[in-house]
Image (cartoon, rainbow, N blue to C red; front, side, top):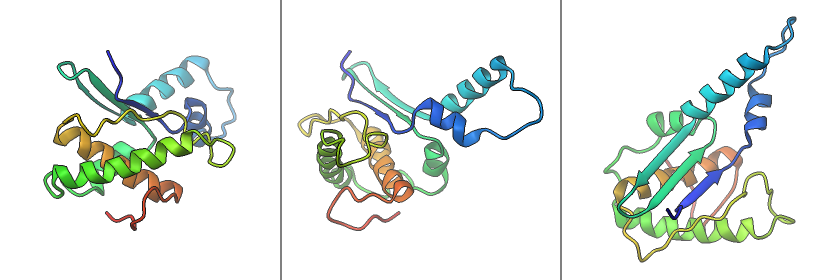
Length: 150
């Protein structure tokens, strides 16, 4: 199956580092593993379609919550609007992946295979578009010529 994209912005180790609290008792390896798995499940947004053979997996702490609470509701933007923005965002994203000496390779890890000739549907474009908005706001990045808005 072709993968449309894997967007892995933060390594699991950074999730653990950001969410660890200091305690007086040594951490149990089993508890850390369970906590990591719970974080991955709760902070993972997955979109798949076997018919078109694509899959998007977005792992970024806080994105799922942001999508549910801050993003414009589905139907607010047209699919064509989001496709146009996603094309611009994907081109810039992929250029940054190829320039790890200039752009943070921890932010831009993998290229996104987004083909403008394929109709991925509303849901894929909605979640991808909103991820780009979330990413730009969270990491203070600018992926296009326009101001980011929610």
